[in-house]
Length: 147
Image 1 (cartoon, rainbow, N blue to C red):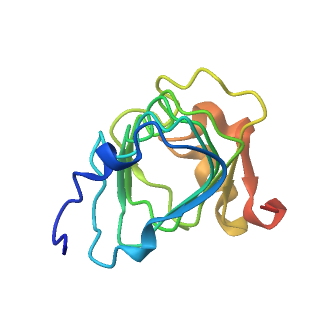
Image 2 (image 1 turned 120 degrees about the vertical axis):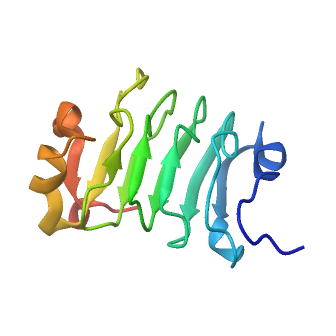
């Protein structure tokens, strides 16, 4: 099955996923270029989720999920990115902070032990960005990530 535009069925596949040692690498879907709001919600527990560089827009798509390590290769735009998400490490590899709809922190309540890692040279950009400035204390250089 080839997905040219938007991979909508993904939410029905992964809703309820509970694999505390599981790794889900979405880069295997070569034509995946967007993730809709329902796609990755309600994941009970996952050790690592890797999102491919072909996906650049994230809008509240991780709602009510627990993902220990979340790796995003490319993020150009976000809205309510962390809404309802529980995580230990969120790695964003984009050097330029994303444009925002709503703050990344909108609806993010369980922050215990959470860290957001960004490229070393971009830490100050992220801390000052509209998307992340209100949660600057959670932002760390990518070189400190060991996951």
